[in-house]
Image 1 (cartoon, rainbow, N blue to C red):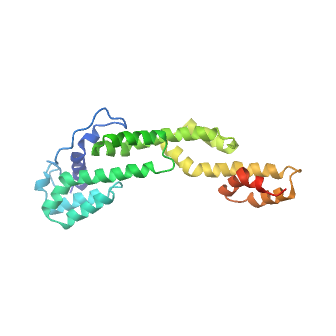
Image 2: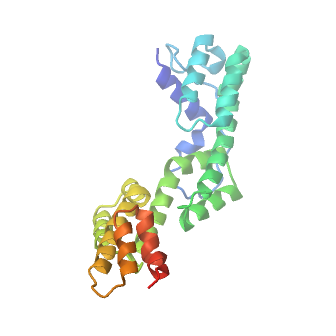
Image 3: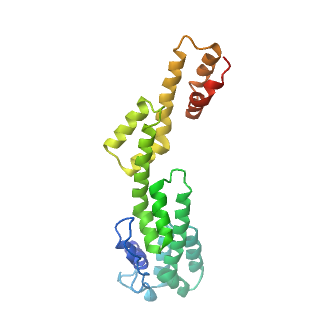
Length: 249
């Protein structure tokens, strides 16, 4: 059986215009996708029309679409409803229902991205442009390719913003320069999510150690610095920004 090949044909027919787009910018609205006329999922002939597919082939196609990582709540609901229904229900889902269900899930995905704390200027700008004239093809293409590139641009801006902070120390700067020598979207996002916190903590421990090396600090400040130096990244940052100024002299 050619399940994978057949399902790709189902999805490609439903989202054909998306395959013609190459990036997050769109020159014009794509025309609505045509009804899936020749999509197969497991038939010996990969061009078997959906209307001629067997029950097994229909179920295999729908189950494969359910397994896609971007299949959201609406796709899951509609696909399961089709599987519980008649053969005609399954055919209708593959020909038209899947495209519309994925469209709804993709709109939810856009609003979820907008709510992320690291959604920057470029990401928001492109999402708002998509929502001004949305089509299923535009949303899916942007989520598959455009989002990664827009977030990459925002993340590079975030790196330079961090470099300009007065408390960006040796370790933070060292790691940022290394990232910028061979940047990828994945490297930058991973570092901003996890690496930055750890690098800043190392710089902050050095800063606390410098405070402890000053023989003229008060006993109270020394005690507070000794307590926090082995603390969490958040505790270290709070101490350096605020806590040390709250210690009774």
